[in-house]
Length: 101
Image 1: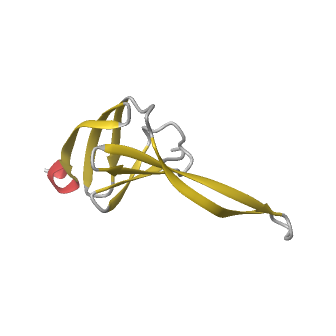
Image 2: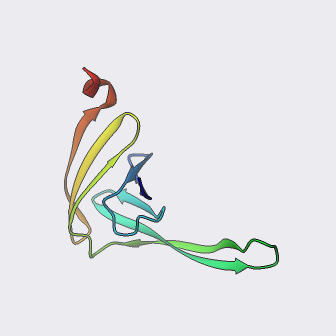
C-alpha cells in the first residue's frame, strides 16, 4: 500500500502517489502552477512519546516539477502534465460511477 501525498485542485483535495515525497505532503495546483507546502516542525520530548508540532509553513512554487501527476479521490481521477512547475495539460479520466459500467 504505502504512503501518499495530497494535492488540491479546484477546491477539492485528492491523493497521489506520483510526487517524490510520499510522506503526506501537501501540494496545490494554483492556476497553471504547482505549489508545495514546506513546513518546519519542533520536537517535544516532554511526554513518553515524542511529538512533532508544526511551527510554520509556506507554499513554494515547484520549478523542478517535470512530468505527469495522477491524482484521485473516491469519485474522480485526473492526470496533470507539468514542465518547470507549469501546468501544460490536465485530463479527467472519468468518475467512479462511469468506471463501474
